[in-house]
Image (tube, rainbow, N blue to C red; front, top):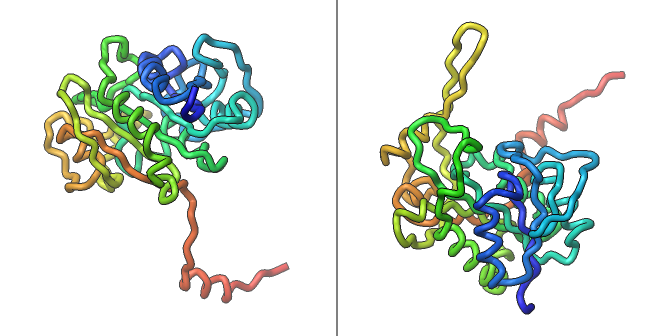
Length: 263
């Protein structure tokens, strides 16, 4: 069919309802081939394996590995003709600068950029009051309508509009569909950080306090940030570049000039 060849992956696993919803939505845009983890690989970042087992699946391929494994295996071997990588839809938001490196969903998009293939990472915010193990949420009860609509729209139009000439990938976060139709808002990742750590004997509990504040609608994030947009009922889309970019630093140049190696 006309349209791009889309490599679809995620970190919730190939059987996740969110991936199926996006798969179905993208079939109207182009040819979709899933190359996704066989099991849940949430929050693994860009962890990479040396070798992975691959099995055929009705949607494409199930990989015994991480999202980054799926992108490398997909673009180098299984779907080398892919024009676009889409990761998602993740159950749970991936919002804020500090989250980007942890997320397997976002990491899949980042991995694609090193192959010079544009990518979209898509997640859906689920209101919770406490830190939640999202693997315990039955996503078959969730509606991904807004996330799918926004992802399909961007997959269809972003490249031709020149979006990927100015960024490497898009991080998309949608509110829950039950909130009603959501506009698309261009954002930047929030810099607000509210991780805490409480010691209890030999254990330390890590807690992301922002989830409770999001559920209350009392977040500290300013207008124009990804988290603010989603809490206000919009689909957030952040145009981002791959990490580890470099800039000229005069102070570091001076340190390097003054370094005296010893035998």
